[in-house]
Image 1 (tube, helix red, strand yellow):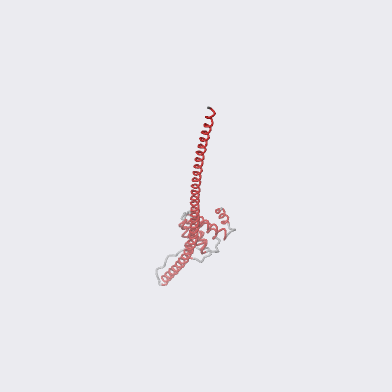
Image 2 (image 1 turned 135 degrees about the horizontal axis):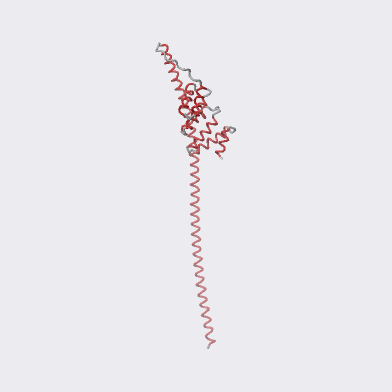
Amino acid sequence: MHKKIKPFIFFQVLALSACASKQDLLVVEDNVRKLKTESETIKTQSAVSYSDVQQVRDDVSRLQGSIEEISHNNRQTFGRLGMEDSLLVHKVDELELRLQKIEQSIAFVKRDGFSEPSPVQPAPLTDAALLSDGEVKLNEKNYAAARESFSLLLQRTPASALSDEAQFFVAESYFGEKWYEKAILEYQVVISKYTKSSKRPAALYKQALSFELTGDTVNAKARFKDLVNIYPSSPQAALARKKLQ
């Protein structure tokens, strides 16, 4: 009786084992499908992320190109404005010289027309005296009075050998007042008009400082580079190199 029952029980165990194995296989297959799906999702997300990163890189490159183009255009614009400013300075000098001649002619006519004698005027200061007087006032930080002396020299004898120094000190007076925008223009006159002046390296350096103090680092760096390239042995070039480091 017991011998007949045992084979029957054995077959039932085998059937249950087979069912369990199939169930496990289905679970494994399902897990594999899920992993494949997750893998495809990750691949898709990675591709999208890479595309986004590449887009950001392209945008940054375009922005850098735009910034460089703007900087280049600014330098060109400034150069053009500098030249225009120099031309205006020449025109103003010519007009002031013509006015001076007209005033002298009027004084001559009055004198020959038996007008009342004018009081004796003190002899005008020489160019050197005007320059020295302006420097003294500049050192005293009396900037407006200093400019009057320098401007009188420039108006009276625009071709004077001291004109470049007078123009440089005019720019220095504005720099001393921290009116850096105006100082930039006045230094530009020295740079453009007095190309052989010993004051030109100092004018380039102080103009670069003025740009820097107004927050225009692009033009400041460009001027420092110009100074190093044009006057590499000057004391100002050594200072400019430190600024460029």
